[in-house]
Amino acid sequence: MASFETLRWRDGKLELIDQRLLPGEIRYVACDSAQAVATAIRNLTVRGAPAIGCAAAYGIAVEAKRVAADGRFEANLQLAFRTLAESRPTAVNLFWALERMRRKRDEHRGAAPAELADALLREAHLMRDEDVRLNRRMGEHGAELLADGMRVLTHCNAGALATAGHGTALGVIRSAVAAGKGIRVLADETRPFLQGARLTAWELMQDGIPVTLIADSAAGHLMHRGEIDAVIVGADRVAANGDVANKIGTYSLAVLAQRHAIPFYVACPLSTIDLSIARGADIPIEERGPEEVLGYDGQRWAPADSGARNPVFDVTPAALVTALVTEKGVTNRPDCEKIRRLFD
Ligand code: MRU
Image 1 (cartoon, helix red, strand yellow):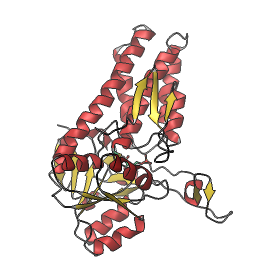
Image 2 (cartoon, rainbow, N blue to C red):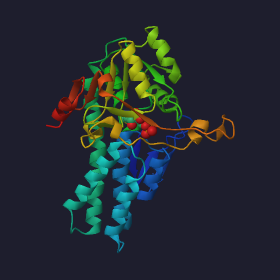
Image 3 (cartoon, helix red, strand yellow):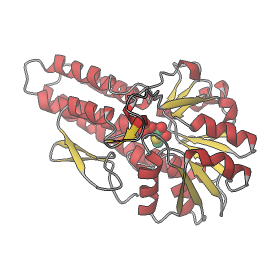
């Protein structure tokens, strides 16, 4: 288990480690309403598909508790679902988690508000615990793909910080290391929000797993020199045909990996697979404000009047994915049929 908690329930509130401040400062932000959780998701206090899903579930629970004594309980809860659903568009775990909370609410139709609020909180705890359990299972399956001594490149942060614990892509690496394999991690900085430089490097260092940062643009050069043995990333949404939406820059890595005959692995739980979306081109891709590209943390390095585009995810076609790792096991060369079978 990682030595920090990405999200925790304390004194009737959801507490989130503030990922905007890492690695400089470890500070928790307390959220006591759905609105506060939605803001934390939107401004990247909490980020990473499974962590966003868990936070949203707690957002509903905390709101139900807040408005339980309110005459407009039903309407307020309805508003909470809408507010959270509008926080970010790409990670399907957000909508998956809200749907599961909606089902829990429906199961308790007619119950007293306080009783429903308790049931929703229990469900949120369950989802958090399940996430860690599934990540561990995924890690065990995926660890078989990594051999002792491998140099593994990862992108963004698909670790404990992006989940309720253990991580998806970093979970596979953690499990391989726990099995005694010497894995050397190369982490892309991950422009523009620097999840690799700030979060992946910090998280792996907490566990004593060797990590070397590289500029995103150095990946091709290192692959060409034979210094990368495998690539493993997480996912924000996988379409029914196996196309993968993940942090911007993932597609370029997949193309490079194919060019250099390096395996390209994607690790995610089934809750990241969206069977209602036929192909990657239909996945909504979030575009964030230009300021994230023009500078960072209040510092601006681009000319004052320059514009910028900031699509924060891209889509990797299934044809470039060597294997998909889920809690169900390793699916080589994922396609429609193999993905459908995962849900049988
Ligand atoms: O914008 P972010 O930081 O939320 O993007 C996160 C990613 O792209 C991760 O790779 C993905 O959510 C998988 S996390 C286990």
